[in-house]
Image 1 (tube, rainbow, N blue to C red):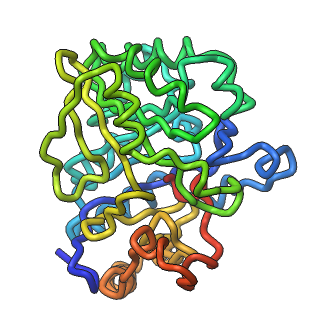
Image 2: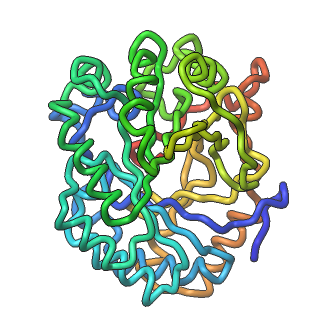
Amino acid sequence: MIRDKLSRKFEYLRISITDKCNYRCSYCMPSDVFGSNHKFLKKDELLSYEEIIYIARELKHFGLRKIRLTGGEPMLRKNIQLLIGKLKNEAGIEEVHMTCNGSLLSKENIRELKRSGLDSITISLDSISKHIGKKLNPTHTDNKKVIDNIYHVLDHYGTLKLNSVIIKNINEQEIIPIVNQFKNDNVNIRFIEYMDVGESNNWDKDKVITSNQIKKIISQKYSIQQEPTIKSSTSEKWILNNYAATLGFISSISKPFCNDCNRGRLSADGKFYTCLFSTFGHDLSNHIRNQDREMLRLFFQNIWSSRIDQYSKLRSIANHPSNNASKIEMSYIGG
């Protein structure tokens, strides 16, 4: 077990296995920045599955017990089920989860993912309406396939987390339709405040709808009540009274959770980030590819034990240096 300068443990690693995505959501990979001329990582720059398994096994030495596979869109990476199986069976990771946009799932590959050992699937869905979906994501076609795949995941797993980013004057009118759609299902509907991740999404604090505002909108139609929240969780959990679904609120803007952050992020090309709002990454790729165990462990130990990140808490401090620093894009480090 290792702790940083604020006594936060390292237990959780989010791994971006590709920087590519078939969506162009405005808050993550806006099409005017990530267009046809954008240079994505080359195949030989990506960490191989063997290298990912190697780093997972080594970081387990420091307390790693949970991994979430992200992207980009992780389902663009071929044979992901092989990676999942080896993370569980060879690296000995207790929990392996995945977050995706749901468009590339199917009955068949969901079954394969479950069989390989994947513990859960989280799907991002920001609107029920096709028209509103187009506002957020110009590559959006129809939510029917994603919604169908949500129910396929429920068929295999029995439960699912659903992530919805809410942006003022874009999709706040979708809050109630999303709840309406899934209220009778064992879905944890998680509403996420629009965050200032990266430099390409033209973030404006005035576009943020806070979790409290979202709760107020929901409570006009439904009875809701708060449940105890796990200390290291980013999501505040609420009950939707008389219905199977539960609600989650991720409040990075209005209610930062830096004090309990136990996670790091690994990019698809092997850079380690100690915060979602990092301005730079620590390059682990040479140590991974050389399989220099002692140097890798020493390097990582120095990174985590020196960690002081608490960007979300400091954001509100006027003229704080971190407010003007250039941040890494969310699509590169997987959110």
